[in-house]
Image (tube, rainbow, N blue to C red; front, side, top):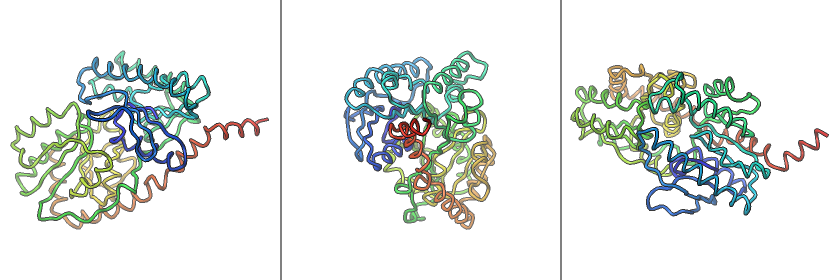
Length: 393
């Protein structure tokens, strides 16, 4: 596994690695390092090699791309060394960025098969992060790199069906691509004992603090709610370039006592934090990247029996309906405030959404869907390729 991410905070990478280890495979993960972490560590029989530190708060294009390029360079040097010792059958590369796959050039030339996993579709992600558009030179370059990366990889995984349609129309054929949503692990995400209602009603958002996530809209909506309903809180967990702006907004609205931004927690600790809340909030902006990025938080909330208020984005309308989520008009803080008040006052609504969501999550969890990934892995292993060659003869 090669991923420009913090392993302990990335559900998708952790879930794949743990699943492969449970199946008896030897798994190494090359990833980022947080302060105080060791260079090499082990987690559930997965070896983690942390080759670079990152703050995750880059605002300029230069600093963002420089750190990506440095990670790519380090991985390109390290992978051939590891390949000599281990002879990897498969190298599973996670974007962002897509072109991280080229770090696996030497292993590919010596027989390794390459999977490219598109967590976030890169041209649209870049445009959202740095206020670009589809006509910009940078966007066109990223589409070109997307095509080269897809051609280099043996298989491509897309994280939702909307991006599958776009990707297969511009960068790779459908026969090369699969869709694997970021399904929650039911061993981690399951209903806990109900929280003490004496502590007041708590909304929660765990995740990245980027503009497309719409947290400024949610904070403004909460300010409207706070004037009508006392005793509510809004907990935000995460890091990202919008953190300072969001904290300033909280201060300007006088919400310091009821809205707080806390640091992210490792994935293994996240369920206990979610269990302390009454309702999950997913306030993404519907336009562009935010409207098409599948939110893992929704399925995690569902799996824990939490009702959810979510923006009516194209991707969420694709997968969910009104029986599962309480939708509000994306970007409309007044409508979100109205839905927040409704969920606070209507216990019957909360129960219905929680029960329907939990049933949906149980049908769409990693335990039920892991076979899709294992079949893909199995088809790429040397034994399967040898059998295919024999059949072709």
